[in-house]
Length: 78
Image 1 (tube, rainbow, N blue to C red):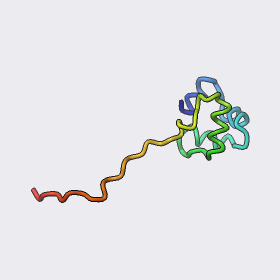
Image 2 (image 1 turned 30 degrees about the vertical axis):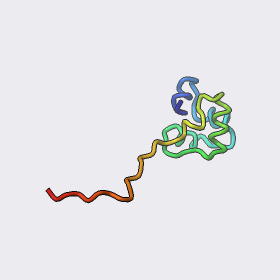
Image 3 (image 1 turned 135 degrees about the vertical axis):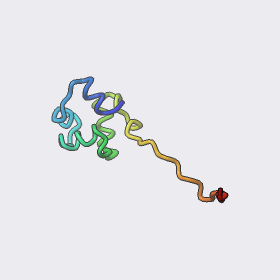
Image 4 (image 1 turned 90 degrees about the horizontal axis):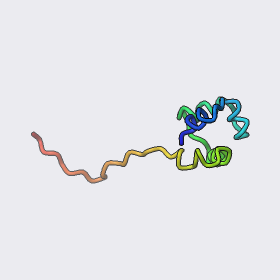
């Protein structure tokens, strides 16, 4: 679950969530919930703990676009 979805479901504002997590500001919570930045591993673990696993470590993983092959076949001129 995304942090923003959890906070909406629990009706938590940024200040309350920051206080629950501890060691983080409301500004940082806002950046995290809108995906503008990712958490440190320590913060991600604390978020997982305070959300009882609803927002887990894997929820912070970003989808990655696979790299193109290092060896590509030549294109024919059409």
